[in-house]
Amino acid sequence: MTPFVRKRIDHAPEHPELPDAVPHRPDPGLVIIGREIAISALREWMAEIGERAHVAVSSIGKVKTTLQMIAILLLLYHAPIGPLPVYAIGVVLLYIAALLTLWSMFVYLRAAWPLLTDPSSH
Image 1 (cartoon, rainbow, N blue to C red):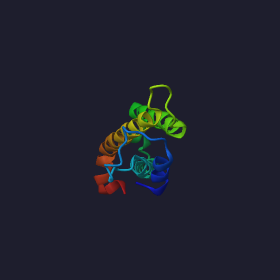
Image 2 (cartoon, rainbow, N blue to C red; image 1 turned 90 degrees about the horizontal axis):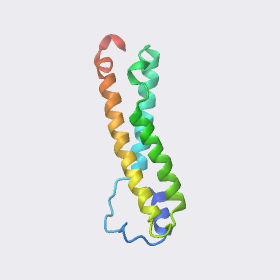
Image 3 (cartoon, rainbow, N blue to C red; image 1 turned 120 degrees about the vertical axis):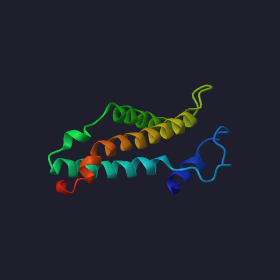
């Protein structure tokens, strides 16, 4: 977990649904950023060889981005709204977005794999 995320959790209101008993939770932000870098490089390379259509934006990416934006808003607000645990919902949405991130990366890599393994396309 990054220091920024740890600081946000430490200074957030108490959330019994987010125990500190799980010290090694993966940081979904790192997964999302790493995928964005990898897929941006893949798209750039595919555009250079004239095959950008193989890695066009999919509906998975649109859902992923929407979930990320909602999660960020909820994490920034973090105060419960009545019985609604806003912060916990934000964390869950961010993890779902990270899973969609990995799924969409797999879809992009699978679409580009024939070109990645073809020596004549390098």
